[in-house]
Amino acid sequence: MLFEVTKYHQDLLNDFERLSTFFEAINEVHKNNNSKFNITYDLGCGSGILSYFASKVSKKVIAVDKDLNMIKKAECNLREYENVEIINKDILTCEFKDKADLIICETLDTALIDEEQALIINHILKYLNPNCTIIPNSIINLAEPISTNKPLNHIYYDDEINLNQENKLQYITLGKFINYNEINFHEKIDLNFKTKLNFKIDVDGILNCIKLSTYTKLAENIICGSTSMLNPPILIPIKKHRVKKGDEIVICLEYELGGGIESINVY
Ligand SMILES: C[S@@+](CC[C@H](N)C(=O)[O-])C[C@H]1O[C@@H](n2cnc3c(N)ncnc32)[C@H](O)[C@@H]1O
Image: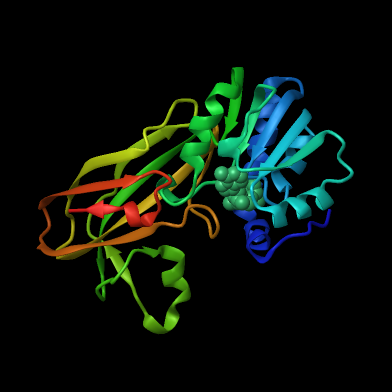
């Protein structure tokens, strides 16, 4: 099937790893459900690709996106699928008539900082039937102590660094990662996040950065790491410290989920 898309959504479709894990998860939860889902919501439907997958395993799919341009493309892409209803609205202002048996929500971003996933999940919790399945069902956030070969003057996404070849920004990890937070999408999410990261240093060097990575648990046995279009790791510059193997370093990290990368504070 050919999909009409914008450049951004074309990149999303080209990310085979992202797409195939969503496809696999939708089919896996359907297998466990034994029958078609009565009502499925695809929140942030974009081109409609996940609604297309869901239409095969659901009696009715309600696909919502706030971007009118994308909605026009989704309408065109899914015009032959009579069980898909497409709504052009901000999910956060939607009052849904029916409760859902399956929620698909891909408005993800690393640690949920820069996109509205956490706000959308909090809004949608009152529209779930008992035993409603949510894809993804949770995320796991990791932090690592990093040394970069040149000082960072702002927060970088890892994919920006790979693209920026002429600057040759490189980094190494100075110690083991910490699994600092897990977020379950079946529960209300606290939007104000604050923690202390206790890093154990394994390599002598200059600590000048921390790296945040997010793993997405789509279904019981399906976990996706970062891909080109799903949760690229973030590098956050910090005040530089000379560190030695065996040191223990404590760094405070705070941010607001959905608050944007400007809300990140490290000290
Ligand atoms: C990462 S794209 C995913 C698109 C599609 N689900 C896919 O997997 O290819 C996220 C989409 O969510 C939409 N979106 C983000 N926040 C939204 C909100 N509050 N209400 C409605 N749509 C939203 C964006 O317009 C964008 O099209």
